[in-house]
Length: 112
Image 1 (cartoon, helix red, strand yellow):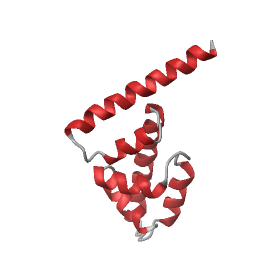
Image 2 (cartoon, one colour):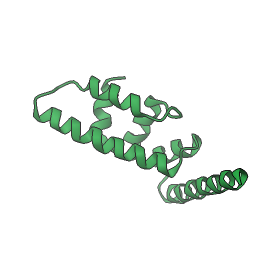
Image 3 (tube, helix red, strand yellow):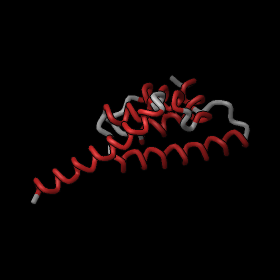
Image 4 (cartoon, helix red, strand yellow):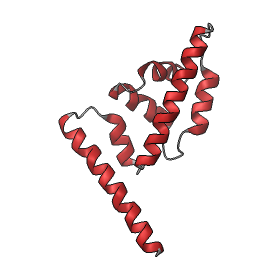
């Protein structure tokens, strides 16, 4: 039964990566998708990443409204929640190239 579960999850991962590859055919600048595929990141992990980015974006906007100019503590929080499979510098650069959460990753890029 364990083999069946493992095989099913691997097939689902491949199907997800195949969908991303199809998107990349028409838009080769989808660097974050490339990173996802190269690192074997699952659809659930990408959903969790997107949720994390949404939360970080909201926090950053609140901090900006309060007059914050530096977001290093927010960056550290992001690092602590980033999947271990991913390199933070690669994530930031790929998200910027793909125009994902640009304001957030522009600020995080300053923390590198």
